[in-house]
Length: 140
Image 1 (cartoon, helix red, strand yellow):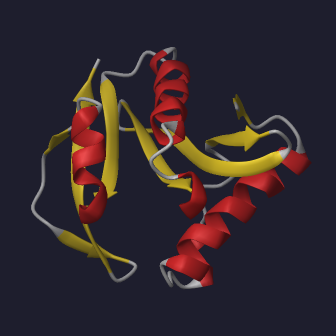
Image 2: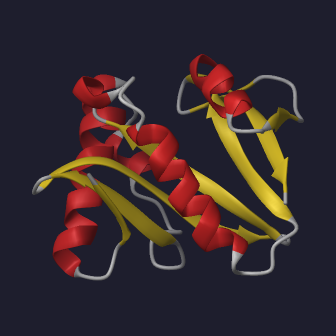
Image 3: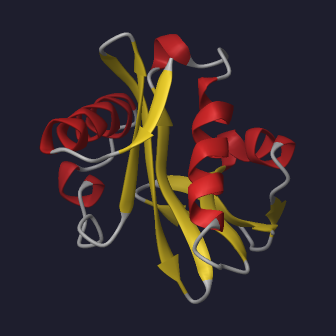
């Protein structure tokens, strides 16, 4: 498996395909919310199994933190460790930007996954795109 920062238009399209499949088709997030105004400022990542895109995510710098967003893994690849590998690569690259920590809004169903990576809950539960979330932070 290969995890890389997006460098080409094809890689960006691969990341968007994974996100669309997970968020729009599977989780029923409205399509107009999935792609947002932050796409151009974010650093995107895509994971491949051979040539097949299987996971994606992005980060952007917000208030001194690297804000990790749109982290997703295709259903058939969940539980294989690819999510952890993706997070490790995003964290490694984001950490080079001199940020004080990492921040993300986790779906409630993914809290245990992010806790296993060292993230701590810092907010009450809130709704985003009709899905319950909490904010989580990992200090560097």
